[in-house]
Length: 177
Image (cartoon, rainbow, N blue to C red; front, top):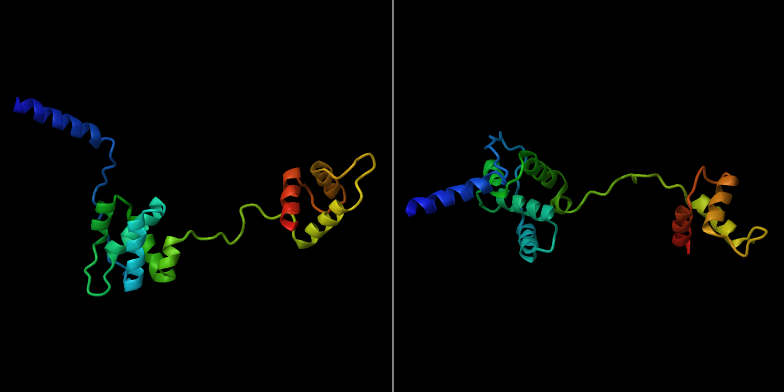
């Protein structure tokens, strides 16, 4: 009877083991970036975890920082211990440590803003002004008013911009109104 229950437990464990990512222990070299948190930073991170309202990635970064903290007489965890306990990668722990030392605690928790947008803006200030003047002018002959399609076609015809869709025109006009 006892053998059957042991076999069942082993069978269940082997079924769940293949689903879980099992990472082999990786030896990490000398720490280049040492985490020393102030009392305020530590309280902020603890509060962030206690609330549980932030994203999983932010919570993971907060946990990494709290485990790695050697400030105020604490003995921080090694990178291997953090990797094993939080099921994360060597590079994640390294990047979080590096970003804290170089940029500060808030930079670690906040997403980095792009310096340039993924798609460059079609309308700058002068082009938006021309578009607004065109939209406020008399509608073309045979039309009661300007439509977004008509404005898009006219802006391209007047060579204000090389190409524009009605939705781009709508965004530009909505922003200025």
